[in-house]
Length: 155
Image (cartoon, rainbow, N blue to C red; front, side, top):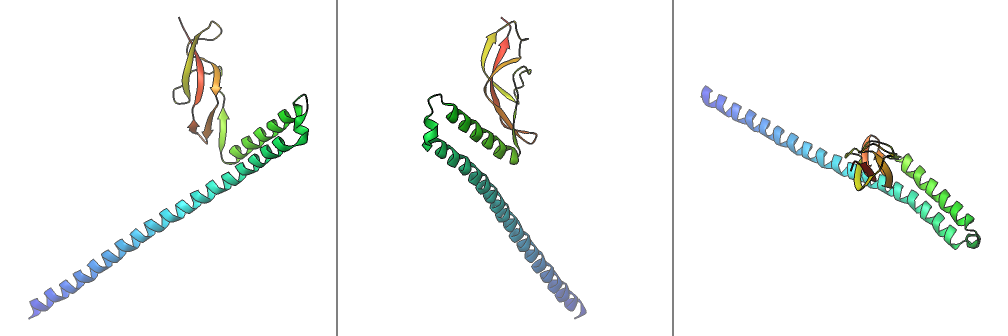
């Protein structure tokens, strides 16, 4: 009988351990799902904050376009307004860690640049960026968008 009792005791202990394992596994799965939901909420809130800031810039565009002073014959008021809104958009990007980077005069780097034109010139050494068609941006040290550039070449 002693051996049978020992087997029963071990079987009960094994069942308890198995139940504990399954409970722990379920708890971990629930934790993983909760962390994922929280992460999605944080990302959604961050996107919402950025969009609200961009809407402020859109409001400024609308005010500039509907303003009677924008009908100035020399266009200075419109140009000034557009410059202010452009600066506002750059500040919004900077607050979120997005900054432009300069390319003209730099050596072509495929991680930072997309060559869309190549020209022959004596002004720059071959492989040097001579013009920027579209500015590149980084978020921190990571490239968000590569710059579209014109590159010098040898003939």
